[in-house]
Length: 489
Image 1: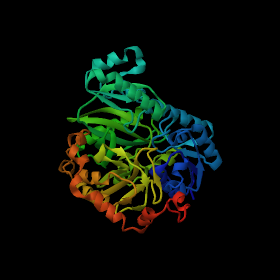
Image 2 (image 1 turned 90 degrees about the horizontal axis):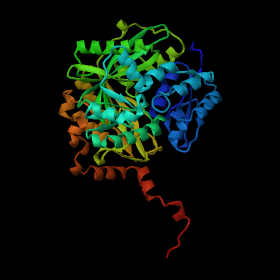
Image 3 (image 1 turned 30 degrees about the vertical axis):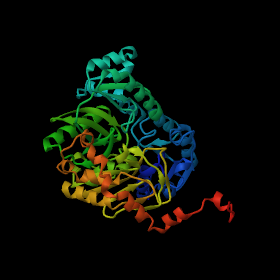
Image 4 (image 1 turned 180 degrees about the horizontal axis):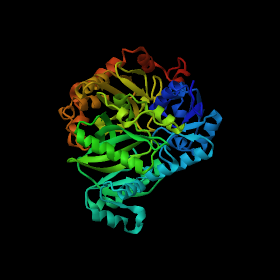
């Protein structure tokens, strides 16, 4: 029996994160409800939840951004709390406020904290004013008329970023000042499309840094702790692909400095609930990048090395409980690596892929956080991530080998994925030695290109035809043609 002030939680999200949250809610003795667009009707989260409520929109993404529909669904499900997951409305203070005004608890920090730290522009100003280092930057809303000239004055290379951005969406690197205005317009358009926020800022782009982030937890009693750092430098187009904990780049002294800085930033913001402070790290120095006021995609690696369920801690913090541990109680154990399985073709410029999942089998011996199931249609309506494979071992070498073995053991027919690409990264000597940075894949284009002479497509096609469901699908006569009977011309 749970002793929480609510018994049902609505998950305002989809895919693997919705399914992952449901697992913890079950463990806590809570009922789960999910909203879903019709394209997700056959997804695992919909079948796992105690209640599933359909929502609609002019696009699938629009449905998951419809605050009124989600709050109506929470009331319909009798939910006492809403968990936003990540992406969509998770860092929208307007959403958190609307949920609370509707008499429902919001599983996350207070709306004013989201507004402060979730807004990349305000967060940078706040962190800098509290004495923490940030990169040189220009913020559009400070003076829109001079934004372009102020950005040019910083000097190239520049990074154009939407204020409400996440997941790399809308970000543009500018190496030629003549391309700046075009990049600004593209970033503004994507920021409005994905986050409903067209505001921008530009910062000095640091070439080839490491991307280090620190997981923090805070409660309503003023307690704030870190759960160590995560290394997130293996990226393509600013989208993380592989994450691990701990970072192979940090010495014990640097780790202590980075983690204590993250706690200092969170404490200055009076942060409550789970959050992540992100840093750019280069040549022994680091500076604030942004703070994500939500659960991160890569949170499982932290859970694996600490044994702490971050979703459960989010629920407890929302329920007003004090943290059940002090900083000295949190111990890092072993090494964890997470790889993201995407519906995309790295060999063809990371183009998104789609199709019906005809056969799906995951390997054993690793943690799998999956958002798909056999028979489900994979579309290009959402972010292409299908699942996360997380390996945890006593050492980084063993974790890398375990993750590599697992990714090569995935069987997914019907939709092209980046599995072979992930295996090539995990087999690359630079990755194995821990010698990489955010420009690693751009410097090594052969990893994405692969080897087209292997005959793998023909091999997979032959293997697929050995499966009865695939043969039956290939031999099936479309209904329109079948209706013609035995008629011949």
